[in-house]
Image (cartoon, rainbow, N blue to C red; front, side):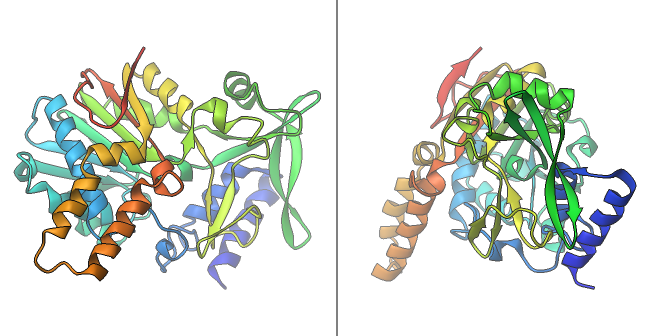
Length: 365
C-alpha cells in the first residue's frame, strides 16, 4: 500500500467514525501521518519547495546569527544561551547557525533546542535536544525562540461567508474522492471571523488556525525573558482576509508548483496558508509579549549584512565570476520583494526591551 493510500485509509476510518471532518484533521494527516505524511515520508520535502534555508548552504543562518547576537544582548547575555527552533525540519538551519556561532561571544555557550514532530537523524544530530512539541521544552534561563515557515504549516479550519453568516467547509468522502461539505460554523470560527475577517465578502473563504494561542502560552512559560522571532509568508489580518484574497490562501505545493486542489493525493503535497500576523501579535500580547517589531525579510536581512556578504565574497582570492554570480543570486532570492524577501518577520519580547533589534520597525502597545 502506498503512503498516499495509507493516509486516505486513516482519514476514511476516522470519517466513518465521526462523519465529515474539519479540514484541520485532513491537513494533520496529510502532513504528519506517521507513515505517509508529507513531512514524515522518506524523501526530502525540499524536492517540493525551497526556503530561505535551502537557497544557500550557509548564508541565511549566518544572517540570523547576527540577529541572535542582538537577541543575546537584549536578554542580558545569558550563559548558556538557549535557542529554541520551532519546526527544526532536517536540522539545516541549526547547523548553519551553529557554524556561524563561533564568530560571536555566545558561541561557546550555545544550547540549541529543536521542536520537530517528525525529526530525522540529521535533525537530532544538529541539536542538543529535540522535542515533539513546545509544551515539552523545559523551563530554563532567558530564551530565544525562532521559526522559519513554521506557522504556515499549522493545520487550519476553513470557513466561507454566506449571506446568512459563516459556514465551515468540512471534508467528506465522495465516491473515490474527497470533497467539501458545508456545516454550521462553530463558535470559535465565528469569533475569529468577527475579530479578523470583517472585510471578507459574501462567498469569501478564510483559514483559521486554532493552535496559535497554545503555542504562545507555552512560549511565555519557558523563561522570564523571552524573545520570539517568526519568519513566514502572510501579512496583517486586513491583508490576509481582504477582498483581494477572498478566495482564500490555502494551496498545495508539489515539485515547486502550486495548486488549489488541496484534497488530491493527501501526503504527497505540502499544504500551507498565509499567516495572519495580527493573530500572532494578539496571541503574544495575551501572554505577556508586550512589545514587538515587524517588517519584511528583505529589510531585515539587509540590516543584518546581506549586502556586506557580497562585498566580502568579492575579496576572496578563490572567487570567480561564476561563483560570485551564484552568491549574488542567492542574496537576491533572500531579499527580493518578489521572492523570499516579501516574507514577514515578527520579533516579540516578553520582559525585555527590543530597541536594539535591527531591520524591523519599532512597534509597541
